[in-house]
Length: 172
Image (tube, rainbow, N blue to C red; front, side, top):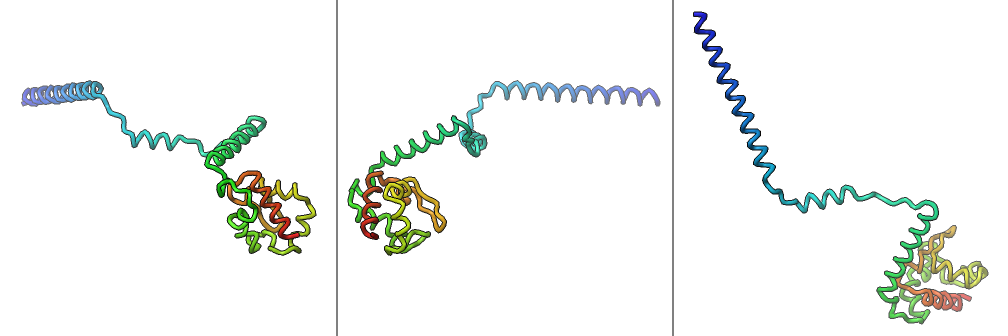
């Protein structure tokens, strides 16, 4: 009886080993066939990877940072100028005031000086050059914020200057 058990175990072991070898051959064949297949790139997956590895921000430090910031500002100004000057390039201060400035300066919204001569006394004392510079570059005052070019980046320096002159004459 013992002989039958040992023969069974020997045959059973051979069958298990043969199945294991057959499995290894199938795995090797599958790997070989898969390596020969050309995989087309997935544009959705590639776009997702590009989006994931984009930097979150930029660092501006030292001379390089100041130069980069200045270049970016100049590029933005050129892009705005390429779109054409606001209001067809008119130098009519009253027209520009009505279309760009009156929303805040006509009502006193956002801390803008009210449309009265009394509200403009302190500002007029600073001089026209300071007022023009604040209108072009923007200004953070104690009572409000003046966005650069009154919030209209398409206004040229000349348009801002004639509009400030118009406002000075209006509130003097």
